[in-house]
Length: 113
Length: 114
Image (cartoon, rainbow over all chains, first blue to last red; front, top):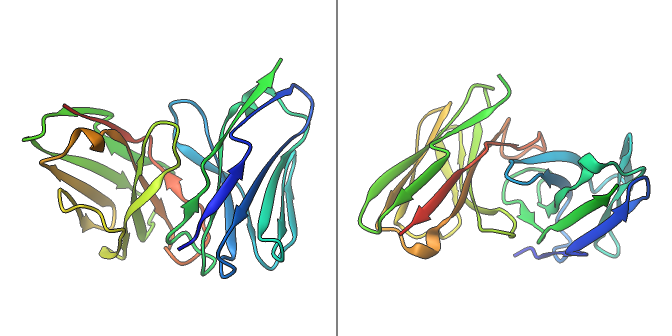
């Protein structure tokens, strides 16, 4: 089955700086890669996703890049703000769908004011 | 209504008890999911229902029994659980299991088995 590794497990950045979280996946058939944000005690929420036919996607301060050859994808957050503090999970699945999403182990991001 | 509602928020049960977790959505989504999340770990898929039929069971022990009475409701019946089953149980829904419409998660039921 699919295996998703995520690094780093914890990340602290100064407010206003950029944060980068990286994930690698094992199954070359995976073609859908969402990122979820989970604030303390709250539900996971989708923040951005990318399909394998696209190399990069941006939404305001958030971007995701995908390297299919190397089987890795990254989340980039620019101009970080205190409300970006949360646990971020990457995930991967086949068939461009949510069926059998495999999540990474999570990154706890702390923004230092 | 763009929410997935889960009840109860917290549940404490003994190993001999029978209890049920409930999940409801009114977004017209046809796929519903149960995930289990242990502390500081990612969500792990347990079950997927598609159009009210069980489509995926991730080798979950039979002490967990899912039920989908209609397209808006999803239950998880619990019986003879073990302390290691203590976790946050998350329900989610999406338009369809095979597209990449967002997964909408509920706030979860925090289960403690004593």
